[in-house]
Length: 203
Ligand code: GRF
Image (tube, rainbow, N blue to C red):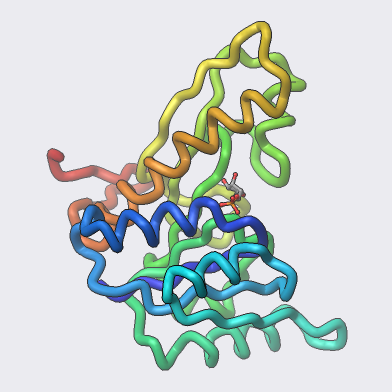
């Protein structure tokens, strides 16, 4: 399955997916067709180029509405005909204009055990709350914020000696593994969705 990746920043999850794909360890993915960033300054863009991936930079213009932006977004990625779009630190909320055109084909990585700690800076939210366990989640994207059906989750322990950055770093390490695994499951179609539950074929 042809796959595209959306980013806004560092792109370490994107890099992990591309490197795993290039090593041949993401069965089901036939090509990483593009990396798209809504931020010109995203360091991930250069990383993607160094890995030989086509890049697209598409910032939202101040004067355009979300709908107008999402139509441009759709027009930018449509020619690639990807069966899967991976949000890897893409900081824009995607609305129905784009979603309706890629229904069930967009997944996102979030750095908490959803439904806890939705939204930005989830690791710090969890840290400040004083949780003993946090982690990361890969889920399908729907119209709700960080609310679509969960594909995979991984728990990460918070140690008493942790700073918020320590916890963030250990969660990120797990994100890098979990995202490639989820991409592979979805690209191979090894799941069925029953209500909110994503049933995985035995791995
Ligand atoms: C990750 O923690 C991801 O879960 C969140 O944004 C961060 C992006 O990091 N959505 P990177 O750009 O992949 O390094």
